[in-house]
Length: 180
Image 1: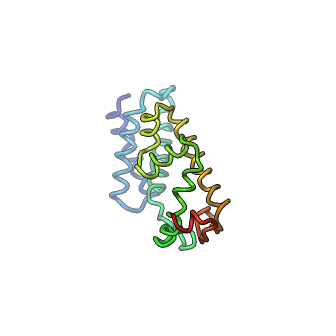
Image 2: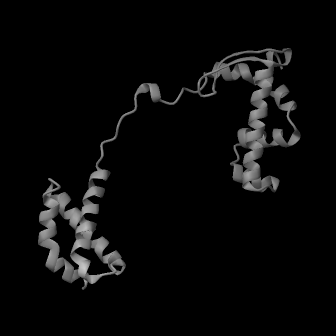
Image 3: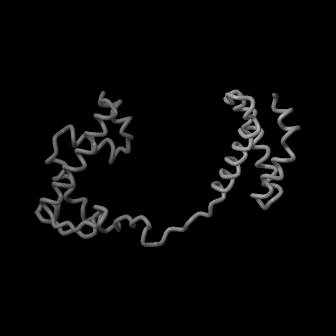
């Protein structure tokens, strides 16, 4: 049975079926159009022609459910779930003097990974291409270098981290961090 024939035989009953579940007439028409697009596109998946009507009703029920899923109201997140603010510029300025000495403690490969991704702004894929590494190798190298740099700062300086691991407070711990 072709889609046109299905439409002729079932459209009035399906319209009533949808209208009992959806208040807005325009939404009823939209859902019916969606149903018949789905029926037309998936008609060949029906294994038993005798179950055509029940199959079309199941497609219709799914379309109504999808309609309501798409209309779910968005829930606003509370301010307590908002992303933490970036460290103030003065804290970044305080961290900069020690950065050179901390980078010097890293291996050449780790230092290069950080400079390429964090300073030059390359993506990890671009870094992988430039250094002739696999993408997973580049990701590992960048992650390892960040961990080593963080560890170097924590070992040298008095750093207070917030619950997400961001810098909340900083006190330089060595002469290199104080002046450089």
